[in-house]
Structures are given as structure tokens and as C-alpha cells.
Image (cartoon, rainbow, N blue to C red):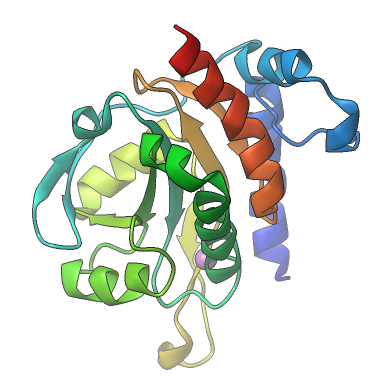
Length: 210
Ligand code: NI
């Protein structure tokens, strides 16, 4: 892992820890009750996230309001990333499969941090590799900057020795947003599909019990 990426992750972890909603604390998941998991999710909320209007992988405008009534599972990355993006998107896809029919109430979103390169066509080819329900979003650079700032996502161009090696270091948190679009918490990079399901299922149960 590059030093700059480590720094970035540390920076984001600091913000995230301060914000609460840490979904992956040290103890083994099996030791936590559903009530404890809810406490972790709901405790000490911070304003993370915000409204957006972007373009999806079919070049259609999409806003956060389109996904009300479902949980949103949001990941920021870029399509030519060879680092953490593919692994975490596979976990998201795995969680969707494991949720079965309940996955209908979850909307996974992949939002690019390189909107100049990741146009709808690139996104379409890319999201297909992972899951049919995954929606890719892009937009104007200023829109992406505003949104990443609202989600406290850090990203920066790397300074490669060859221009063809250009890449982007970025934080790889997966954000879980509620049915009302508000922040519930996040999964850090490397979270397994099983762990996501464990957190998401009580959220869905709470929704259907209302
Ligand atoms: Ni990546």
C-alpha cells in the first residue's frame, strides 16, 4: 500500500471514528446482539452525505430522491482502479445475493471520483461485471467534488513516473444510508459480504416492522 494511501486512510478513519457509526468494531460479529448492532448504527450520528443529482450508466439523470424507500449502499471509486474497488464491489455484490429477495430494498450505487474518464459507457461496462442491480453514477467534476466532500471521501491523483500509470488514491468506505436518505453508518474497506448482510438485515427488519 502506498504511503499516501495509508495517510489518506488514516485521515478518513479519524473523521469516521469522530463521526461515530463505526460498523466494524474490534469484537467478533457473532458476539453482538441485533440490539447492539442497532445502537452502533444509530449512535452519535453526524451529518454525512447529502442530496445529489448525477447521471447514471444509461445517461439518465438520477437523484438521491429516486431511491427513497430503499437503503442505499454507496461506494466511491473509479473504473480503472486495480486496488480496492474491485474487491469491495464484489463484497457488495455478494451481500446483495445473500440478502435474497430482501435485496430489492437495497440500492447499491457506485459513484466515480474520476468523472472525466468515467463516462456513462465506461460505467455501464464496469458495473455489469459485478451485479445487475449496481447503478453507476457520474457527473460534472464540481458535482462530484461537492458530493465527495459531503461524504468525507478523500481522493487525489497519484504522481506516477509514467503518465500512463495515472491513478487515484481514494478512501474505500461503503456508506449505508437509510430509507429516508439519511446516514446510518459505513463499512470500511475489506468488509465481507457476510458482515454487510449481518448489519443490513436488522435494518430491513426494522423497516418492515414499522
Ligand atoms: Ni479503488
